[in-house]
Image (cartoon, rainbow, N blue to C red):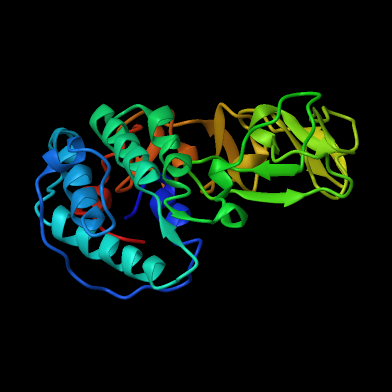
Length: 288
């Protein structure tokens, strides 16, 4: 299913194990199945579809999106996921993890506009088909704090594509330093991101409102300054590509091309709006 910012949480959590899946349909069930105890592998596809679509319907209605195709589309996709994973004899369906995944999705979808709940779904669904520790998705990796041991650094968020890399000499831990937390991994522990005038090195890490130029952190451009991309501008601005200058992020209802353009945090159907989990594709149950 397509999620806001183009990142599919469940795809990352479940399809990381196997590269392909077939498309089969399973029987429909009511959303009350999620309250009947741990869900079995035989009923998971139908139960997930019912949970997802029944939970998002009110949010979709408020956003003006139809969800009539939601259940059939989601169930078909989840049946393919289950078929793909259960075809591997080394993987075992974890009913407790499946229930945790269902609960996380229900909470996020019913909340509608709570981005923090949406960010938790990826990690909640990890481990449904185990053992898969080596395939843990980036958004499920634990965050190490300043001064704590680390395996490496991660860039991105759990609502967008993220990349993580291990560091030579990384500490004996499973935690990573996240750039969004203001730290990166060096010599086995998290240290603060460099500020203006300090070296950013080959990794190109710099602090808020700075960017790496010729391996030195320089200040981001302020309103009216020249830019080639929004990341060249301070965080309160975006890069207007019509003029290649930094401008204040756009108010809700303004025309936009990406989420970074918008004060509300989301560009949906070419217009800025306040962040919501309900997009046209998510409400239809479409898969990326």
